Image (cartoon, rainbow, N blue to C red; front, side, top):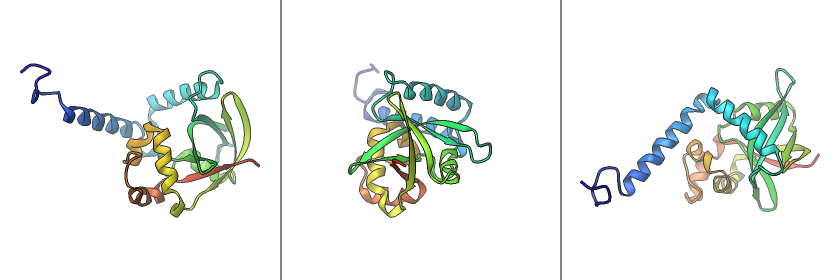
Length: 176
């Protein structure tokens, strides 16, 4: 069969969906158990460098800096800042056991955020799960890499976002 002919293996809309499912599975595997594997830790370090730089940073990208709950050492994590109803938010695509979430809670919400080359102290306040659905939807619109972890797309019904909301902490960014 020729490559462009309908019904040819590897072509058509089903092939694109299959490839997307495969990439999503790979992305989830790179964060098995809610923690990045060695490759993703290396990749996250590159993101921290890029997101912290003024000229390389994507619009919604930032670096969250928070004291480690055990070591007390400052840790840096690449994050996507989601704006919703006039406020900025951070979402944990990996759930409540992600290290940065546990560190933020241990630090009483005190952290710093580096955006577009500028760093400022912040206080993070957790949003109750019943108020997270719209923020989660907006988050997936600005952070497409998180879609495999949440299992939804930004056009999913709000009821689906309400269903997953308890599994994905959302924090409002406040100035101290």
